[in-house]
Length: 136
Image 1 (cartoon, rainbow, N blue to C red):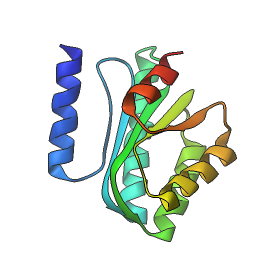
Image 2 (spheres, helix red, strand yellow):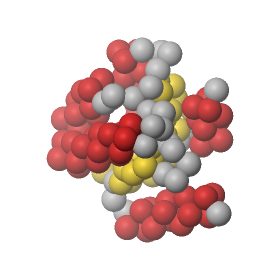
Image 3 (cartoon, rainbow, N blue to C red):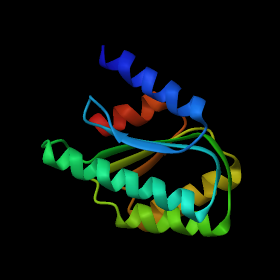
Image 4 (cartoon, one colour):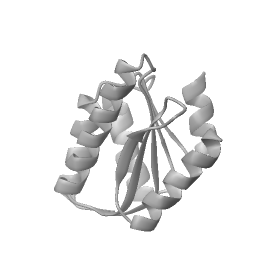
């Protein structure tokens, strides 16, 4: 049933074509990046993710974040900086990013990963790979 609920939430968010972040029933914090990203949009998503992480902590869940960038569009330079700063500021134990971004976005993600720390953040092509790493 959890998988069904998670799929329904994901479908709903993607249908609305906007970013969303929430604590899932399985204890993971989910962040979906959809469409073009501005500073305001990225900051709002980082704030949602921070609130979801706080809720996870209150429920004694691990601070594991699964970030879906498979539907992301263009990211303005300020949005990239906001994402970088947000990734450094969020209080998570592990953060897995997945999707098949453009080579440019892959490079941006790699820079964030290097800055934050390779043991806490990793980039994956598939959701399955990302979840497996989070669950290790």
